[in-house]
Image (cartoon, rainbow, N blue to C red; front, side):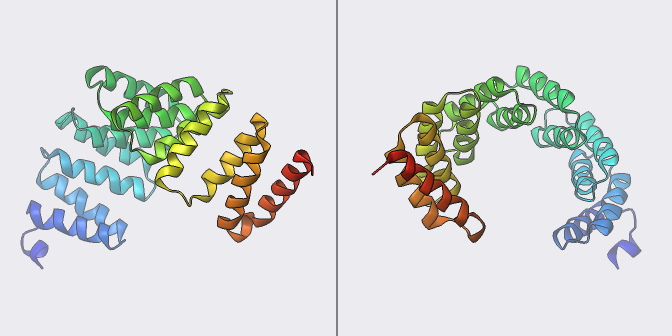
Length: 231
C-alpha cells in the first residue's frame, strides 16, 4: 500500500525488493529493485542488489549491466567487482574475469577476498602454479581460512608437490578432524607417496565417516592398500 501511494519513494521500493529476495520471490524482487533504481539512479548499492537478483534468476546479461552501473557510481566497491567477476565466470569469460581481478589487485594488493577469488579462477583454468601463488598469499594473511587449505592441497597435488599437499590437508584436519573428504584425500596422498601404513589408517578413518555412496569405494581402497602392504 505504501508503494501504491508513493510509487517513486525509494525506501519502500528497496525494502520490498529485499523482502521479496529474502522470501525467495525473486521476480518480484527484481521488479521492485528496478523501480528503486529509477527512484534513486545515483545510489550504487541498489544497482548492486539488482545485479545480484538478476544473477539469481540467471539473467547474466542484465546482471552485468546492473553491476557495471554500480561500479560507475562506486568504482572501489569490492563486492560489486566480485559480482562482475562471477558473471564473467558463469559465462565462461575466464580471461576477462582474471584480467579484472589482476588489474584491481594492482590497486589494492592486500585484499585477501580478491586474491582468493583469483585463485579460484586459476583453478577453473587449470593454472595450478598461479592458483598456488594466490592461495599461499591468502593464507599468509589469514591462516585460518579452512577452505583455502583444502584447495591449496589440491593444487599442490596437481603439480606433484605431494608432501606439501599432505601438510595442507593435515592443517585442515586440525580444524575439522571429522572431515571425510580430507581423510580420503590424505589416504590417497599417502598411497602415492608409498606411505602405505599411514594410508591404511587414513582410509579406515575415512570409511568410518563415509556417506553410504562412498563406503564401497573406501572399502575397496582399504583392501587394495592392505594387499600392497602385505601380511
